Amino acid sequence: MIRYQLLCEHNHEFEAWFKDSASYDEQAEEGEVQCPYCGNDNVRKAVMAPAVKTRKETAPKPAYNVNQQAAIEAAEKAADDMRGGADPQEVAQVFMEVVSKLQKHVEETCDYVGNDFAEEARAIHYGEAEERGIYGEATAKETQELREEGIEVVALPKVVDKENSN
Picture 1 (cartoon, rainbow, N blue to C red):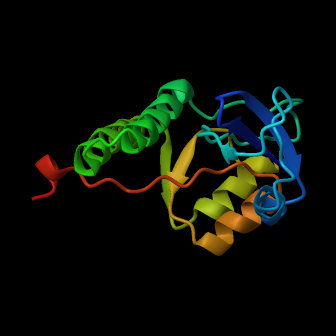
Picture 2: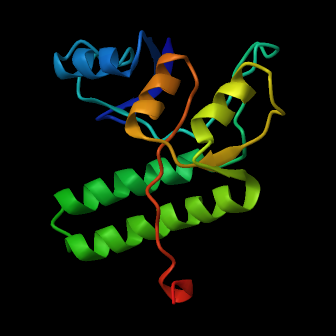
């Protein structure tokens, strides 16, 4: 099972559980995922902070403290600005600044595990490794398998720091 935080087009936030991410995609495409507050079926996934749940816990706990609301608001503002006719280049630049700040926060507060991300996420989830925030690389297939196991992961785009890239 996998849990998603969702938002309708009226910004009502709610959570829903699905067998796997493919089930969510199919149901959303068919208009079967509806907001419990207004019945709207124009629903999208909200930005979620990664969380790794161990068997000892009763509820998921964020692996680190990320201002989820700020990320959601930045994504929504970018979409609204685009619909309002704003310059796409300027909108993209502002949005990428938010993503860059999130990336920096992750790099400063979590352990980098490189290509061992999927293996380490499983070890944490099943209580075989120390619980902590991690980041690294995973293939799309590995990410899908983690989600199907109920391990919450979020794929973040890698933003290159232009000032420090040379």
